[in-house]
Image 1 (cartoon, rainbow, N blue to C red):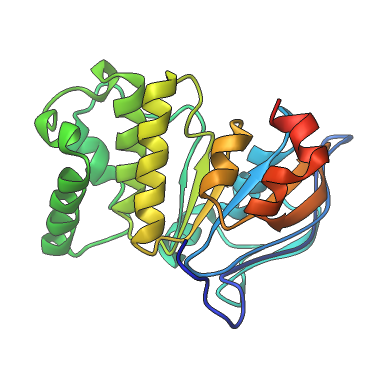
Image 2 (image 1 turned 45 degrees about the horizontal axis):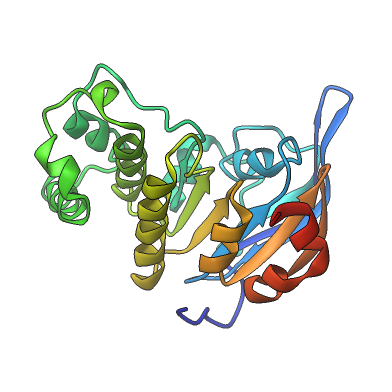
Amino acid sequence: MSGASSGAPLLAIEDLSIHYGRVQALEHVNLEVRAGEVVTLIGANGAGKSTTLRSISRIVPIHRGRIAFDARDISGTRPSDVVRLGIAQVPEGRRMLARQSVLDNLLLGAYTRSDAAEIQTDIERQFTRFPVLAERRRQMAGTLSGGEQQMLAIARSLISRPRLLLLDEPSLGLAPLIVRGIFEIIRDLHTAGVTILLVEQNASLALQIADRAYVLEAGRLTIAGPAAELLTDERVRRAYLG
């Protein structure tokens, strides 16, 4: 695992609480991600994992607390400006433009950029990273397999040159063999120095590639520590590792 840098965290969530009407989705959540780390957030369905990512992307309103990115408070920032600051989210369910080509979907990842030549370089870089997408660059995204769509979703987010990549359930609905391939990609991104906050139902796989981990239960963080320690933690094993 690549070492995380010292100094202030790249992302810091402090005392974050979020309500949906009268439902408390998150309560007093404190979490940080340092540059170069893969941090995973595990927990049952409905624990608030996706809400945490959506709050960082500023898609859901904050009830209390603050979110800082690179020491800057982004709690009141618009979602499009969050992308410009360097945060990209790969949403659950991939959200392709099904009737657009693979290439058009990749170009969508560059909507905050205006450096045409550099964008082209980055698209070619993603085609090198994901050869199957290069082969299908003119194909409609909706005709790709689930695994190929997940690769496209990750590639699209990387076109914005993020400093922090938010991955929401990248293994959802994929066959085990495909899931292993997706996790190899995440491992390669980590080696390349991409900072990642990963929400994942498959706790075992997530803990195997992460540096650190947090466990979210009913909107509250209950366990945090090095991922290797959580893999052997009896509470985590009982609840999430079968």
